[in-house]
Length: 178
Image 1 (cartoon, rainbow, N blue to C red):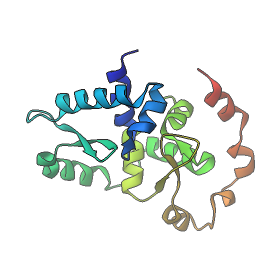
Image 2 (cartoon, rainbow, N blue to C red):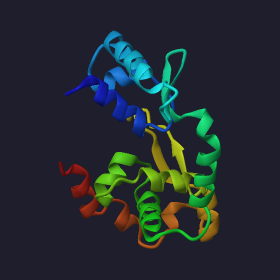
Image 3 (spheres, rainbow, N blue to C red):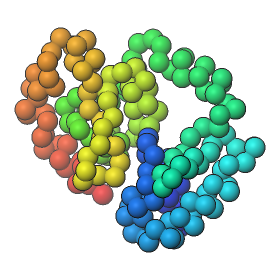
Image 4 (cartoon, rainbow, N blue to C red):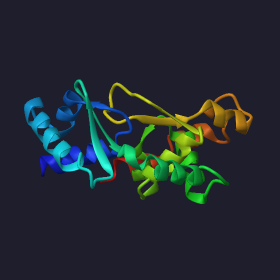
């Protein structure tokens, strides 16, 4: 597989800065090869005609939108987080609530569709929280305390039929499917 493509995909799905070492582990290459590929990606994206930038500080890298597009991005985000939740957002929130902590790829494996925009929207609304799991490179998502407050419960374990649904056979099968 193409190393540039792999690193580009990892930076795209990661919602936080990643260290070269983390990326190298994920793509099973040495840090020197990864650093060279990151430099190439910076040359590709950090151009005036690109809406994407590869940010770099110390040993951390992150994909982000171009600063000069902040006004249009802010307007888009404002429109995205107002109004009622869509069916897809409610489904995603339900999976996060019952299965969390969960990575975005795991969430997408269960739902069968890309969830990047939905997860971002739920994060902006304060309904899910992003955290780290030392066993996973990607961030994990869980229902937020704010969402629990809105539901009038103290913990996700108080959700209806939580014990049965948290480790449901269908979910386990979906996560192990290739």
